[in-house]
Structures are given as structure tokens and as C-alpha cells.
Amino acid sequence: MKMMEQKHLALLEEAERRAVAPTDNLRACFELLALAGAIDRDCAARLAPHRLSEGKFVLLFLLHGQSAGLSPHELADRAGVTRATITGLLDGLERDGFIARRSSLEDRRKIAVVLTDLGRKTAHELFDEHAKWIAALFAGFSADERSTLNGFLQRIRRNLDAGPEHSPRPETRT
Image 1 (tube, rainbow, N blue to C red):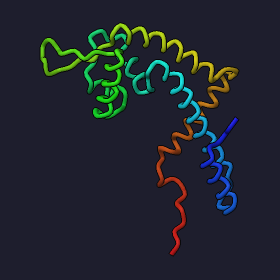
Image 2: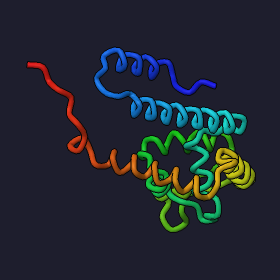
Image 3: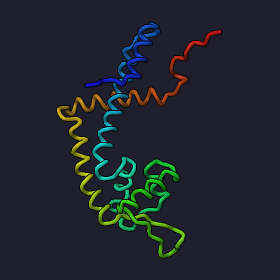
Image 4: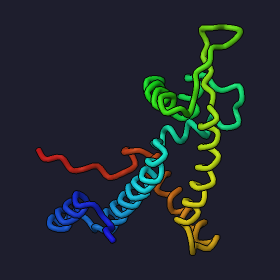
């Protein structure tokens, strides 16, 4: 099983060669990045047979249970993407028969995006499948282990959110 990408191995080797600092933190970061990449690739492979990307998949679930639909800008806000991105995602979902765009009865300039029967069926089936897949990623973890992992990840997030002003600055040569 490959733990790190080649580019990260190369950076780690260079850091060790230069002996600039202990490389344990670099190794942990690169292993975390490799794991995140592997999860993303597996997720993409699981969604591809359904003609879905992760972005399209998220939109199906945002629309599921919304019988009146949502406007494209509401979807963009809830999905955390730009309005330009939402247009491309919606075009693909509409082309593949998962959604329809409907004009509002009150104001024809307003559009509501709704799931088609295929979209509702796919969202329902994939939600269960996706939840089981994610649960399987943590098979064998105790509640205490998951809690400890979450604490570690939150600590990394806080360190990242603290910004560059709280981390050592690289030395500049004069």
C-alpha cells in the first residue's frame, strides 16, 4: 500500500538531506494528504458509474426533500461553490436527467431546480450506499479512538487557522 505520493517522498528526502528540521511533522502531513487523496479518488470511482462527480452528488442531496426546489444561487451558497461553477454542475445534471429547471409561477425570471424521478431515486440509493462506505472507512475504531482522531484533526485545523503569522518564517538570505 502506497502511503505517500512520489512528490511528497521527494520533498521528504530533500528535507532529510538538508537536515533543516526534524521530518516527522512533514511525514505526517504528507501521509494525511495522501490519505485524503485516496479517499477522494475512491469516492470519485464510486460515483462515476452513476455519471456523478462529488459536486453533482452534493447537489442531489441538497435538492432531496425540497419539493419546491431551490434556486441556482441558493444551491451555490449551500454547496459552497461559485455561481459559475453551479451552472456547469446543473447543466450536467440536467443533461443526464437528474434535475429539471422550472420557471416560478409568480416571477418567470426566477428559476427553481428540482429533482426528476431519476434524481430522487439516485439520491435515495446513493445516500445509503455512501453512508455505509464512509462508515466502513472507520471500521474497527472505538468511539474513544474516533474522538481522539477528531481532536487531533481539530488541533491541526486550529494551527492552520492561526495563519502564517504564528508559524516560523523561512530565513531570508541577504
